[in-house]
Every structure is written in structure tokens, then in C-alpha cells.
Length: 64
Image (tube, rainbow, N blue to C red; front, top):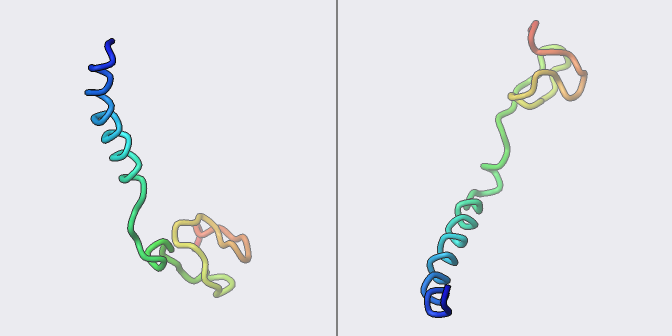
């Protein structure tokens, strides 16, 4: 590969790399980073909605 071809390809490769990194960076507000929450039916404390068990009392939500 010649120096001329390398100089022609460099801006294109740099653009691809820049595009990949810019897709990884999101422009969300701090409140959008938090997931949904719910109240544990056993201890009545707020815990993650996506969790399978309460983070406070440790009981499973499968039987609730």
C-alpha cells in the first residue's frame, strides 16, 4: 500500500471510528438513567422493578 492510498483511507477510517464512539455516548438527562421502581409487597420499601427479589428483605417476587 502506498502512502497516497493510506492518506486517502485515513479520513474514512477515522470517520468510522468516530461514528462508533459517538453512538456509544448518549445524551440522556440524569433522571432518565434510573430504571423503574416498585414497592416490595413484603417490606413496603422501594426496590427495582427489573429485580427478581427485594434488595431490602431478600424475598422473591415470584410468589407475590
